Amino acid sequence: MSLKPRFASVALIGLAVVLAIAPGCSSRKKVSSEAQIEPPPTESTPPAPPAEEKAPPPPTETSGERLGLEDAFFDFDDFSLRQDAKTALETDGKYLEKNNGAKVVIEGHCDERGSVEYNLALGEKRARAAKDYLVSYGIPAARLTTISYGKERPFDTGHDEGAWSKNRRAHVVPK
Amino acid sequence: MGSNSANRKHLGLYAATTVLALLVSAVFSPGLVAQTDVRIGVQATGTMKSPLMLARFRGEGPVGSLPSQGRVIARKDFDLSGVFKVADVEPPDGKPAPDPSMAGTVRVEGTVQQGEGAAFFRFHGQAIDVGTGEVALDRTYPFNEGTLRDTMHRFVDDVLEALTGERGIAETKIAYVRQEGRVKEIWVMDYDGENQRQVTHDRSLALSPAWAPWGSELAFTTFKRGNPDLYLFDMTRGASYPFSTRPGLNTAPNYSPDGKWIACTLSRDGNAEIYLISRDAQTAKRLTRNTVIDTSPTFSPTGREIMFTSNRTGSPQVFVMDVEGMNQRLVTIEGSYNDSPQWSPKGDKICYAARHDGIFDVIVMDANGSNPIQITSNAGHNENPHWSADSRKIVFSSSREGKRQIFMMNADGSDVVRLTSDGECFNPAWGPRPKNKLAVKG
Image (tube, rainbow over all chains, first blue to last red; front, side, top):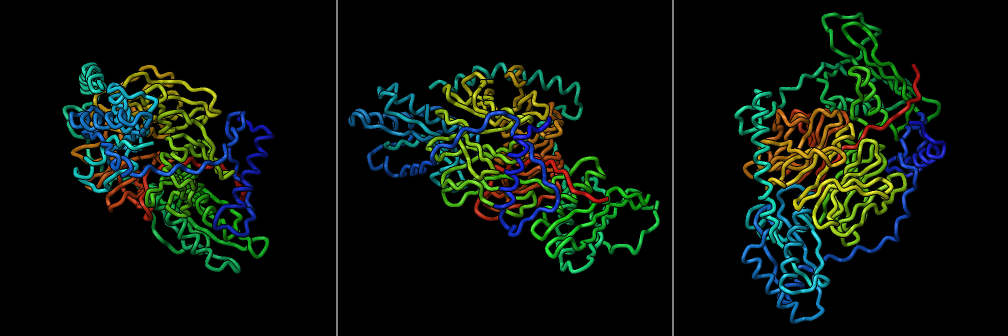
């Protein structure tokens, strides 16, 4: 694959920038010939990044509890709703009926076992299972947002079933 | 929500496939017959290493402690290559005669010389076959104090290439996630754990870094906009930009070997599915269509197949398909929970994490699904395995010392070395080898 001259010069400029800012190397004059980094094989330039937004603050963990919102809990590697989970979601359903227009975010969480990626998907299954149940209860879907945190925001950082069971949940918080 | 019963509907079909696969493997792979456990890999004693005598480096002129500094770096690189058993020797006076009794032994010598100016130096390195006297490598590298480390890494990789036909990984980097408090950021370090530096500064959750094949870009998932989005980090600009910000999951990125596609997991259709998105973000191709979790795609080095994790049989297992999404079939036929596959750059093996008796361990198996070998044991939970660019080593996260940290080992499980110690570190990804052209003097 031959380098187009434009990309070759971009790569060399990029390398010069890297060498200029690389930490721990103060007076950098690279004496050996430049390492040739292959440019991206695509022709298009990457889209301009959007203005960096401030990260939204994480939802307060007790904000839902204060309002009487309850969480649904799950078995390991499972997203089916146990009876206790349904009862908890019915409590949330009643809250949402009473507070017309109120919106919630349903966060899907997992315990620490298993990979980052699989648990992001499993957490989403849990959040959606809870959302679907609330929709079938009668809450309009537009008032229910889901997000998965996988195993990345545990409620209990312990390493036993006591901790794990607390982390396998659909966490319902006001939006 | 009936997703559980949907899973169970598929279970019968895959149970039948599994039985058939077991019967087939029983006929063709006698070593696998009737085993319920994978074999434990040989540790610490199994690697056949070549003897390498590393001479004390000499200095010519006012070069201070550069020879000994350089030698420390080179010695660690030779040790960590997984290829050599290193002995420390004095450099010979003059040129010794060939010694046929030492056939197969290599002696590496080095001299640091003054360069064209006070801040510049040259490293003259040689690798000599002791048995025949033949010089396998004789090369001179200009450098300054700031580039000593890079120069030693390059020299060691050159020696490996001269002796084995394949470069080592001394010049490579490892990307990973480091957590401090509630914040998880992407970091990069040299393969030996040196030069740890923070890449993202989003004060959010940054996860699952993946290297572009040209080495100056990382794909990763970030929650900085309030959703798990895929961003690309351009290391030459020091900035990231959005790649896929679809509703739901944008996770588990993995570049195709030609860098033109990024395999990933999207759930915009209501369920976690494997997609290919072109690197210019203009085209998205959906590869899996079902109601189950499909995630963690990994390209074969040919670019023609993709392995991934799916729980369509009821729990996570490793599957393979071609890049059009056809011919999806089960790869891991042993164990009840197999996840996070990574295809070796050589193409003949995969590694993955298997959960057995509640413990996670790293397994290496042939890419066709035979000969699974467990290469970690009795050492906490071992996950996120990722091959080195030369397929000789595996980097992984382990909780063997408490909080998860990044470790590396040879592909047979020997020579485990810890690389990180600050915060909690996981999700390592081993970067590609740089393509270098050297200014060399014979």
